[in-house]
Image (cartoon, rainbow, N blue to C red; front, side, top):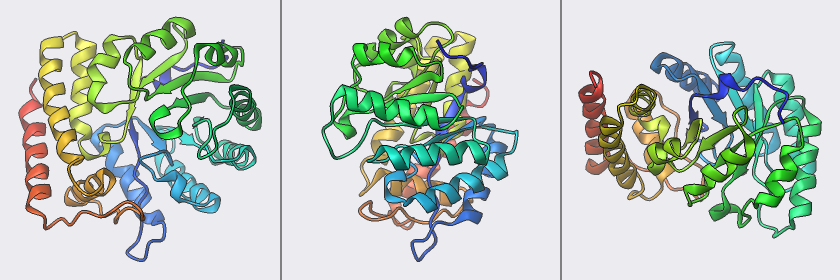
Length: 305
């Protein structure tokens, strides 16, 4: 059982896009502006250098600089979880140690990438990360990208580690959330991962959620969270349908990350384009302009819900 008070993690957590300059370098000033943008929107938590943050397209030095910029700007106004997963354990542990030094509130990691490793390998990998930093650690299960699906056997072994505080459940079966929550208990955080099932995941037992499209429409996810907490499920269902249609449209562009970055730029914060191999989306594209307008209209429509 985790030794930490995890109540501060029960929020809508935006998976932060990493800003880049026109030349493709990380843009630390823009990272601070983006953090402030979300604070003003009412967002309480950020997930840094994960999938949405293009963490695997950054080297360790860049990842550390991004974390420092975000934690400095956020101060005590936000809860910051840093994704420290790398292909190897040594670099992952080093990033976890740095996250602690930079003032982050928690760490998270995928099992590994590229190599197909055993459960014992993943167990030792995650354990080494938890040993590197005295912070709450959140398992990141996203088998559709890593090729590794967290079994209940390994999950139960990880629960014996007092620094393991939760799991970001991005696997497709919604009932995985129920299984992890039942095994983890009340003080164990389960984050819903798939944005399209925000409502379903919460109803299945997720305490909170982390998502990659939240950054393009944070107000709608904050409203959805409010409706769920209020118990207004019919309104939440209506809003989930609206949000899911927006997600489908975001995914119709050359890259979802490029589309999200363009939406954010159109809303006032220029965070550049994604790194290759992810493709950019031109804000002159009439489809992205229409999507932005529809998102803003939805924000206005749902304010009084």
